[in-house]
Image (cartoon, rainbow, N blue to C red; front, side):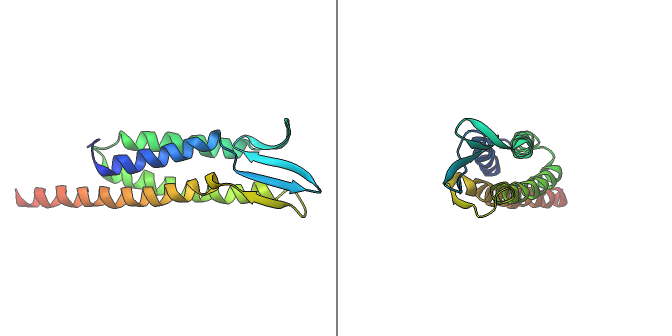
Length: 147
């Protein structure tokens, strides 16, 4: 059902991932020039240095998947499978953050910001949601056995 604890977990995880669109993820210093990593790419002042379209696409897909999973409460097994896929995408997004910060620059000094850990927090929340959905599924199966 929608009012279960796993819905809260999934909603919070989705909101954390959605905030990555607007928040600054890291400051990158290369040869005395300061750049910043945001969801759209790496910017130096107002100019785009490195396009972050894959980050934007991953973040959008993960956010939409969280919203879809919330409304699939009648199909618990499918919900669990989609959350496992979302966890894999979140780990990939976390890896992409590091790729984007270190790939194009030699000798870059990076100062990560707090939003960089949002995908890891979302992974933990998704895992908690999977456990809660599994408990619901076990309860439903045990009640079917009694009849």
